Amino acid sequence: MDSNLFQLEIVGFGPVLKGSINVKPLTILIGPNNSGKSYSAKLIYSLLKASTEFPRVSQFFDKFFPNNITPDTFITQFRKIEENVTTLKIGEDFLVPSSIIITITHKVIDNYFNNNFKKELRRIFDVDKISSLINNTQNSIEIRTIFTDNEFKCVFKRYEFDSSESLINYSSIIIRVEKNVIGEIETKHERDGKNLSIILDQGAINIKNKRKELYELLRIKILNYIIDQTFGRFEIPHYYIPSGRSGIIEVQDKLISSIIRNLSYNGRTKFDMVNISGIILDYLANFTQIKSHKKAKYYKLAKNFEDEIINGEIAISNIGNIPELYFNQNNMRISLSRASSTVNQLAPIIVLLKYVVKQNSLIIIEEPEAHLHPKNQIILAKYIVQMINQGIKIILTTHSEFLLNQLSNYLLIGNLSEQKRVKILNNKGDLFLRIEDVSAYVFKDKNQNHGFFIEELPVSKTEGISDEDFLKVVDILYDENLKINRELEGEN
Image 1 (cartoon, rainbow, N blue to C red):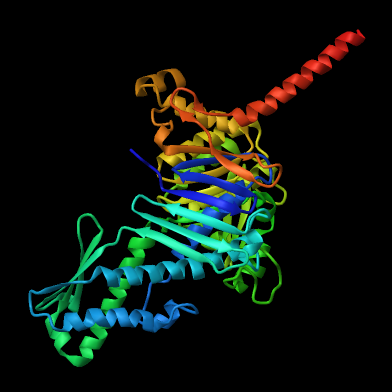
Image 2: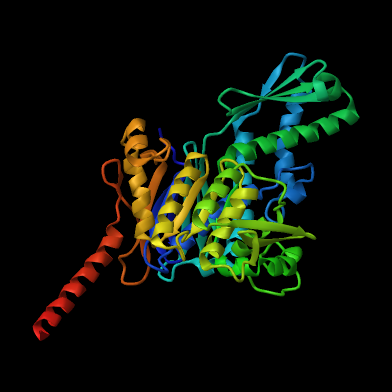
């Protein structure tokens, strides 16, 4: 069973010269510092964010398509539909021509890449121009996103106009007229989810005032359906937990109160009080959703995690509008500014799981192992596996061979029968990873410091996840140790 969420191909984006990533339930990115791991993770986040921020349309087409697309483009297409629908008799239907669906779909895609996605890239990376993100050796960025049935490509050029392309499996839309339709308009999806039937009430069509209102609803139904079919795969609840979270969490209440209230879409405050990236703002905004009495689906998982790894509780005090986080250990209230780095590092993950994260979400975590003792990294790996098996998708960047090797062990455990997992490993039986759920990538410098290439790491049932990148460093240390010992022996 293929569990790919989507495939991302990247050319010339920041430190990344070229590479491809298959996003799966667990996607692991490793490599040197400044090699493009975070760039790639933020790119994925920007793609998802741009789609979920895509407005669901009202009759105000000028608001839905600002700047680059005039309302007339769409009204012309919809009038062609309405002219045909008006002549229908009871029981008759009208198949919307594919040419109209294609025209509308391509305009929706153009709007996504030229409006939403560009804005998100500028906001997330805190840049004024997309050209700032182009690799120094390249003249453009190419980003291709591939799903099972849809494919999108956009090119952001340094000196020329940007462009986008798409390969879409277009849906069909059938409009039928019937008597006494409840609400005057109904929609029915075919079993495959790819085709839509819209049923209109004949009486409403024949009354001029009602017909105008009905056709506005018809436009909304058609356009929203096309948006859902085109970008629905991107509409995954998503969260980004950055590497600098421990410092941010210490002062998050002050940052939230001074920044979040004045957010604007471009990633800066209305009063330009601070220059801060959209990643940090989104990260802080998650905490404004927290109410201590409202528990999320993964509350129990988070409780088990904090009990085992920090021997205390990340608690919340909802005083006023801004939630305050603190560490509760043996009924002693400890502010996060005085708590250990381990507590600060894990607090955002624990709190989001307790109160915010929705089912089937995707969480991007930069360096989840930071400030953790190797023993705690092994515990962390166990809960990452539990998150995956409970429906959460995770993309993580890491420099930890301990974390990687323990996740690799959970792949190997999958080869054992449930009985052996329970007997030999004291494993409840469901604590393992499926090979089809895991992808891993290493960022390699092959071009004399001009950029990095993304290479897929082998993932197998017999050997787990390759740790060749870490083994090279181990070999260097081992060779150095041998030389030192030889010199010491010579002196003696």
